[in-house]
Amino acid sequence: MYITFHKCFIVVLHAFVVVARQDRRNVLFIVADDLRTSLGCYGDVTVKSPNIDQLASKSHVFLNAFAQQAVCAPSRTSMLTSRRPDTTRLYDFKSYWRVHSGNYTTLPQHFKLQGYVTMSVGKVFHPGIASNHTDDYPYSWSIPAYHPSSFRFEKEKMCKGEDGRLHANLLCAVNVTEQPGGTLPDMESGDEAVRLLKTQASDGNPFFLAVGFHKPHIPFRIPQEYLRLYPIEQMTLAPDPNVPIHLPPVAYNPWTDIRKRDDVQKLNISFPYGPVPKDFQLRIRQHYYAAVSYLDAQVGRLLSALDTLGLAQSTIVVFTSDHGWSLGEHGEWAKYSNFDVATRVPLIFYVPEPPASYSVLKESTFPFVDVFSPSEVIFKTDQVVKNVVELVAIFPTVSYLAGLKTPPPCPGISFKEELCTEGRNLAHEFKPKKTKNNEEAVSFSQYPRPADTPQENSDLPDLKDIKVMGYSLRTYDYRFTLWLGFDPKTYQVNVSDVHSGELYMLVDDPGEDNNVYDDFEQHSMMMIRTKMKNMPPTVSVQTRMKLQLLYLTAGMKINAREAR
Image (spheres, rainbow, N blue to C red):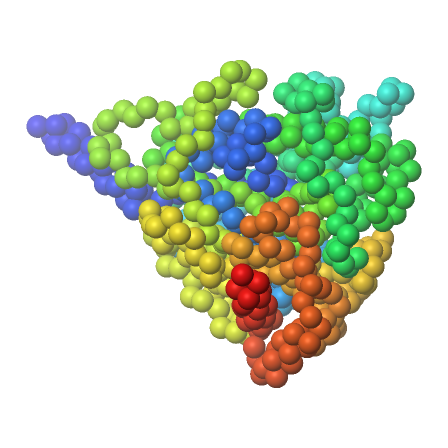
């Protein structure tokens, strides 16, 4: 009788633990590096990304999500603190926000303070000064962050050239068995992430596991077999490979990091606008897409492990990227701009439904899909959100989905506020609504420049060298950018010092190739600038730009009616 009672007690206790775990969902936070929306689930017909597409088919997919600055450290710090770059005051890689601006609570720190085991694998925070050389440990993480040992070879001469010698190339497809340790960084990160999942599955404590994969960041040091997925004769150039005629010089990024690679230096491309030879453009695009498929395989391996360990029904999965990457659009490569191709990112939330019964065996949620085999995975979901959203929204959204208290909205000046958000909770947009898009939804991005014309340091100027800040407002119909004078000593922007402007009508110009900002009469622009100048100094740049866009587009609508 005692044995029967004891067994019953154990069963009830186990059920209690499982229910408790369901009440406190785990989080698997996956962030890619330099991944634009070149995924099947985002409408790209060239790429092969079956595992991410499978995740998207069972998730809420935001089609128009944007980073707050298109470069690694500022974007990641902004995303993980839910503060904009003007609040973190990080525009380069050379300061730590807790010292430089404010002691802001991070997303993983928020979970850690609520009793979660928080773990970091790979590139989550930007390593180095920007995260205090510790990936913000011990504030954000329960254990020191893991970095793959093979990553140190990424900047060394590891790419075999036609001469048989090793080079520091941009294009670097390799035989993995010939690499140090017979592995690559994202393979190592995947192994460590799976090991941690196994540990947490047996421990039973709620966890927040962040996994940062390094690809498709350059160099394209990837397994050479992935190139077979993209025969060079089937690759195409960007639809708009030329520098737009009306693009302000300050807006152009001269892709300096690409130029420094050994194989690119051999091309003798003129600075700053000299085009990459077309045959090499095709090879860059081929290698980028191959890197995406390689990334997809690592994501698939991780999700399959989550599923096999029985964690898929108790774990929220977030998949995103720090920013996008230009693939020849506007004659540009890499990130470092305010264009859609550089700021738009995938944003996917998988939220498991509570199982009706814990004894019922369900079919696999995330079976691994081999990208080299014929796949029947087709992206199909009715949980697509077209509204414009921002990466600063991830913090409050994930907190809400996990059942934690969401950070309050930040006040206008929030340097002394440790926990608040400059984003909005997106969970309320998960429920099916009317198909009409929210025209008032906006995203703000920004990018610094050292001068009005392209310089050697235009892509990544140090704080002390920033003279102009490009603030960019993105709505469903428009992209509106103002390049304004900026003082790096005071971090102040001069809203009256307008260096250049950009306005793109996305309905007719989705590639952002035709800047119509200068089409407006000078008299109209002067009136608008006067209105902006007369506003109180406490009015934010974002509010000023929203109002200015309303004035501009209202005038356009009136002119259109008069023309009819």
